[in-house]
Length: 197
Picture 1 (cartoon, rainbow, N blue to C red):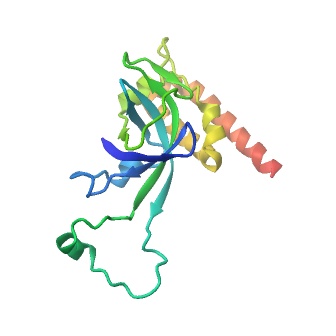
Picture 2: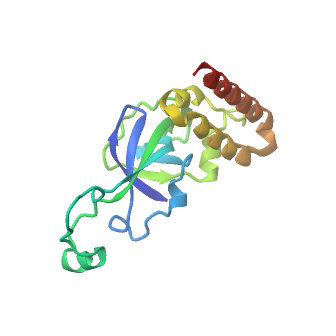
Picture 3: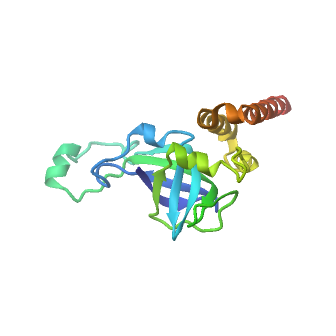
């Protein structure tokens, strides 16, 4: 499902998407489609970049405006000023963690391609997430762990826990041991960081 369009970037792996609203789409996404930890794909030429939603921000230019409001309600504006731009919206932070080429071969790490403004952001289904996290021996792989720690800043531990929850549901017993080791490592890092502060 299309949920957003890229509007800017903070770095080569950190992009911002504006969630589609009713002016952009007849069927805009519901909040559960762009929640924290959601895997997304962004088409780039014949391949696609893979990312995770790690942050959100509400934009509302009307907040903080002082004085009387001379404009009409949104319903009235739709009738009398249909070209009036709706400046309110939701922005989502996307951390890129890999790519999938035209042959369907996935690569975890920093994608080489630069994402263009207005590129579509699409939610990934369970099978796509599974395929992205499966190595050639049909085992779980998570090679972007350190990339998330470095780039997701204060959200990194919670983001990794959300990812591990999803992977545990997808892979089940087959990868229970690996996921438990990653959870212990993450918990140890959190304890160590909290003691050093």
